[in-house]
Figure 1: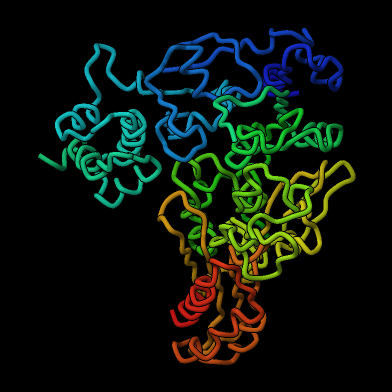
Figure 2: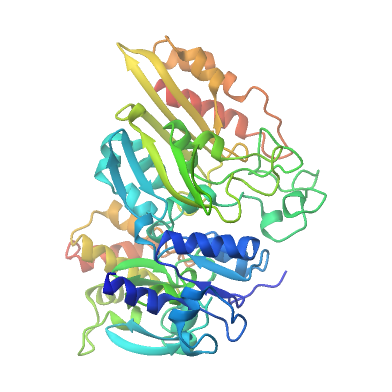
Length: 194
Length: 329
């Protein structure tokens, strides 16, 4: 058998909620080894390039883990229903709503939250600098999510058109209605706006 | 109704092979909930409007992902995301009806994780039902939407039976128009169901929107090359351009020879629980010129049999005009 697959099965197995179930299927219970308790919930996440061991409940969302377990409170929870975009993070480079992803789904993936976009020396990302220059945020609550969507866009498409920016940021609500300022900010970050 | 920030606690299974997922789904039956991208699932659970003992997370099963060309069309794994579908060159070149539909589902982030299987299996759009009220669909004995005070602007025009909720999927009408079929596996083996028969209305089954039953897993969608490269028309009308569900959508495929329609599929979405194939319109335009005149002559046929509710009467001219545009385009 493929050793990688075996290892994946070993890792993934089943995550029981405490001692609720001790009679799972043979294969899963066996592969989880210590069939009950919190051991399976201890996982290591790759967050902003760092390995972060954390105890994660089976149905915990990534937004919850980031904010309440890892103290990465830059990721905001607005609606908690995938309807606002404030919790947007990058999972393997792809923007997703952290409120609508299970933390156990990102075990094998690289997560970048708003805390991870600045350079190692603290220099703000070009998108962040441009948002400052364009006065993009008003209240600022949606800003971390807007930054993440913009960073993902520019990684894929360094010179987007205004329409492409609108499309890329369309999954992030701004209750202040500062959309045009965010779009200007992304265009400035891409060097298209002096 | 209280709002909950956290998910209720439950077990989580993360199989990496279909066979294991089938075994778990079969064993847990109603106590288990299959989850792909989870974009419909988590709302139900966070709201405590539905509850289960365990989630069966299918997202680790690589064999359920991807778009494969087959001898007579394409096969799309049920776990393929809507973004992957919308950006697939194979699908864009031959089945752009599906990519057009997939590209306007919800928001970019939801399309990045939401799956084709989930999109066609999602539950109906009705806030009374989704708020956890004990309506017909939830096992109760009344409908909160079809009342003089009910907010039913988004609800169904056709085929209501006690429940008046409309289906919410954008890809479902496109798949019906493309004569797609759904590959379903369970412990007993595999069965293939035509997309048109995959969706079920409340007259036949008021608690399910598809033929999927506990223990079943939708593993793939097959699109035959019947309509490959045909003339397609897709349009979705919603209150907002992003995130929103269709008020009405139209998915149409035409074979045109010398300006004459030789065959067609015209399917409307969000006008009943299931995609509504407009067979009468298809029959009427066969052999006719594909132009505005033909479109205007058949547009009212599209809504024959519609039964409007207090607030959704606007869907009748909306649907007629979408059919008109599809044929005239």
